[in-house]
Image: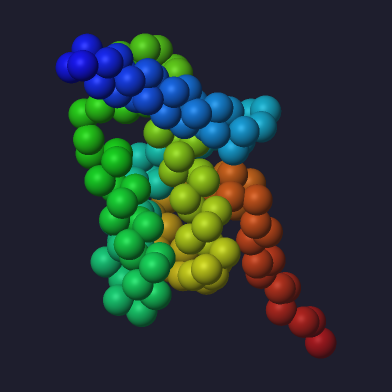
Length: 142
């Protein structure tokens, strides 16, 4: 009886892990966006911390960010970090998916306000999240 429970639990864990991996493949950034996501990952982490601490954002947004930061801090990943490139790709994909949700709820202005990186990095963030950055209107000339 104990073996049946242990085998059933093992199968459930493996099936859950495979389902999560399949989900990552589906929501992953396409083409060079994954490389950009890995490149701006340090700025993304600082952005997450700043956004999570912003009390003007909704509770749901801050909870998502807190859960994301908890996942990133955990030593156990879907794909271990010691595997070159792929180890950090799962983190980048999950960050991108959560940021898409956060940007759609909190707005691009809040994200821009807290962005710690360069304008090029912010443009990469906008491509990664699938949103359009507000263009700075040129001042009218008279």
